[in-house]
Amino acid sequence: MQKYLNYSILCIFSWFILFHDFAYAKGKTQALWTASLSGTSADDQFSSSKLVALYAGIQVLHFLHPKFFAKFEAGAVLEAGSSSSLFTNEFEPNNRLSLREASLNWRVFQPLTVRAGALPQSQHRSPLFIDGFSFPASQIILETRKNYFLLHTNSQMAIPTSKSISTKSVGKEKTPTLFTQKFLAGYSKNKTGLFLRATYFQYKHLTKGTAQDSRYYGNSISGIGASSRFIYAYQGWEFGPEGSLNLGNQFQLKAGASFISNQKGPKGSNQGRYAFLEFSKAFNTTLLSIKAEHYRNEADSTPAFYTSSEFGHNNRQGYGGSLKLEFKNMGFNLELKARSSDRIIQNPFQRDRFQFYQLGLELPYASF
Image 1 (cartoon, helix red, strand yellow):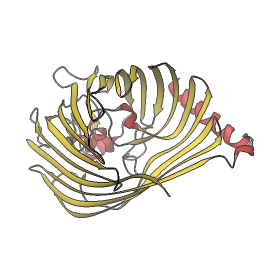
Image 2: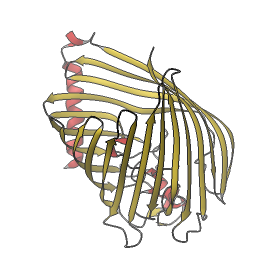
Image 3: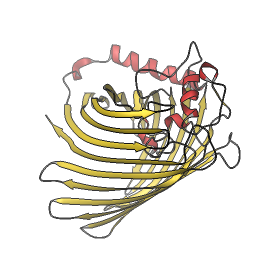
């Protein structure tokens, strides 16, 4: 039923594009660009990577109609450096195109919105669930705001893929799917607010290639190569709070958490948790932000291929932090990230200590 709902939404969008009244074809268009330069170091006992990356991206928002618009965000990544690894090439330098979003959005009526295309999964706001991916997906959103209160729910049917053009499939396999149902409620006023969210998730037909890679990132996998299989299914909940407290014109405090429970996984290996605390201080032309993080992601909480590489994926626990400076007058941001984690349980494909460091300079999105 979920698959047919997904296809129906895509058909509706196709029909709308073909037969839409193009009187709005010259609607409002907004185009922005950004660029960043970063240096990354990632090390454990099985691998060592040192690389420099340049990213250049664009974001285009075009309204075909006041209630119908297209959004496109993509860029090119150029990397150089050295990498040695016994099992994976995750941090190996390469040059590639990166698609962050390519979507059609239809505000049918208040409060209903329908989206389809390549949708960013950063919407889940949990590095231990899905991090840095865009999936082919369709989504139905119901959202209402009254005064300072927000109620939001959305249903999504997606096809989980890799970060590149490859879908990590080996031979002919069933199409992998991810169904999510998200609920969000909260209050926000004058930079002070509190939001509570809960997301039900269910993966099906994950590919053998994804299983093979996830073996090295902490999951329990049987077989090798084209015979790789996930031992456990992935179906459960991700939930947590996120809030901010305005401490005056110059100070702000933010905090949040993410908890994951895979109902199909074994006890002692099916949970994940992440928490952060961030303090910001505004100066005349500079914003300073300091963030502290703690995380524990057990082996089979979620498919490890899709979790954060910066945290070492699954079967790890540790700490992280970042220091960020936003220079408003000069038009760039400078950020330093550092993370260190240890293995939770014995795994022959993972070594105990994983360390990640990154220094980046970013130009925020600006008009052409």
